[in-house]
Amino acid sequence: MKLYFVRHGKTEWNLESRYQGAGGDSPLLDDSYHEMDQAGKYLSGIHFAHIYASPIKRARTTAFRIQDWLKYPSSISLDSRLEEFHLGKMEGMKFTDVQRKFPAEFDAFRNHPEKYQPEAIGGETFPALIKRMRSKIDEIAQNYDRDDNILIVSHGAALNALINSLLGIPLKDLRKRGGLANTSTTIIETNDSGKTYQLIDWNDTSYLDKKIEKSDLV
Image 1 (spheres, rainbow, N blue to C red):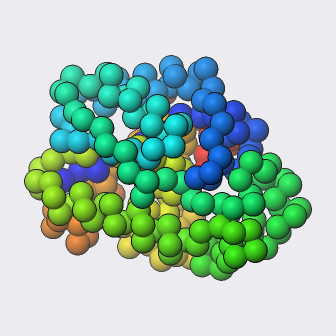
Image 2: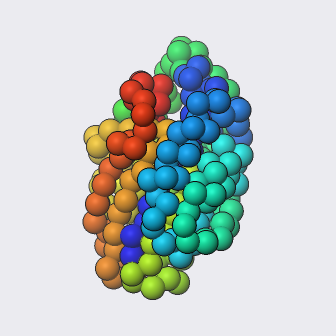
């Protein structure tokens, strides 16, 4: 079974270096629709048994845009377990403002996930995020055939944490592989109904006709 993870298209807050989180959702950039189409073309020949997406608009829109390009019909289900991190008071704030106002939380979230303590900002911990997202992935792995392909459209920070955890990466090392770009595709595979996973491709953006900017990565 192959799981194809796609991060949503780039938004205004991504461009402005603001935290969105599960409670924030700024409009997608005009160029993002073109990039979603490019992702759709890249994935168009794959027969997906199903598509799952975060219900947050930026991810939901990306999923339906990609669906339009698929040669094999595939239904979409929305699941709140695939939402972005709940970032509390950081949502909507520029990174620089968060760094000034919540320096410990900013540094830990970005550089030391194992030390991230979000109580002061009313946020969600890495273990809590991973637990809720993995419950959905476990459900998928156990309910589809071993040769199925599943498309999952979600969010950068959440997918980074989820995928690395599925690959057995310790919490302290979640950031070492690098970030995930907007409209990127990451593929992992399981041959034992989700007991173990292998990485096939990380943060593929080869199909996008753009230079990846720092503001694209999370």
